[in-house]
Amino acid sequence: MFSGLISRCRIPAACAAASPSATPISNAAVCRAGTYRKARRAIAAALERGFRVTTNTTLFEGSDPERAAQFFDDLMELGVEGMMLAPGYAYAKAPDQEHFLRRAGTRSFFRELLAKARGRGWRFNQSPLFLEFLAGSRELPCTPWGNPTYSIFGWQKPCYLIQDGYAASFAELLETTPWERYGPESGNPSCQDCLMHSGFEPSAVEHAFGSLRGLAEMVRALVTGPRVPAATER
Ligand code: SF4
Image 1 (spheres, protein in one colour):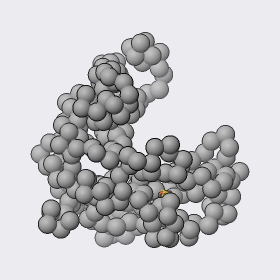
Image 2: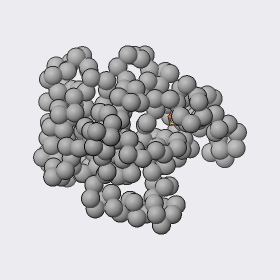
Image 3: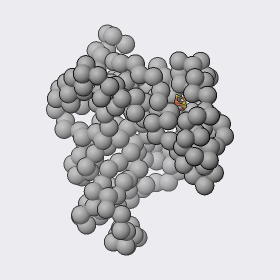
């Protein structure tokens, strides 16, 4: 089935949502045995047909850094072009509020995971400064307008995770959203555990290109890898 779909697909790049939680150890997370095997076969089939494949992995409460590391090794061995990471965030509309990482847990998890990256050749499809933010070696404010969400309802206020109304145009979104009420620093309870790439990756990019110092930090992180605090700094 996947082969048929892929051969009819005209999109030049295929993007696969993949998750270590779909490996046999916790197929329960997706309530279906064999999901990871099928996703892996689909990725291999897409690559064989010359598609560019990137993955987006959401990590939830209970994820094991070592299993996640093995999963990334597997994706690299398969030949995916790049990987994105996101911590599962308990956004208000999510039906299951139990299995999301809280802020401190997210930082601790990513420190342990990214400390394993050295020498493994992982290719991430995101800013290394955002990875440093996930690991807790830098703080960034949220930039919710950096990845706006548009749907049949309009431009979602303020971001893809929170739904506080819609605007008819991007200009209206920018002008009428009370931005000071969002982001962890605002005190908004809905934002306290959020470290999602939709809000913070644009902040990392802005930091990198907003000053010579930021650019130097980005180049350093690209050359030597994201800075990950030692376990004693946790
Ligand atoms: S911190 Fe930013 S991206 Fe996260 S929920 Fe709040 S506004 Fe949205």
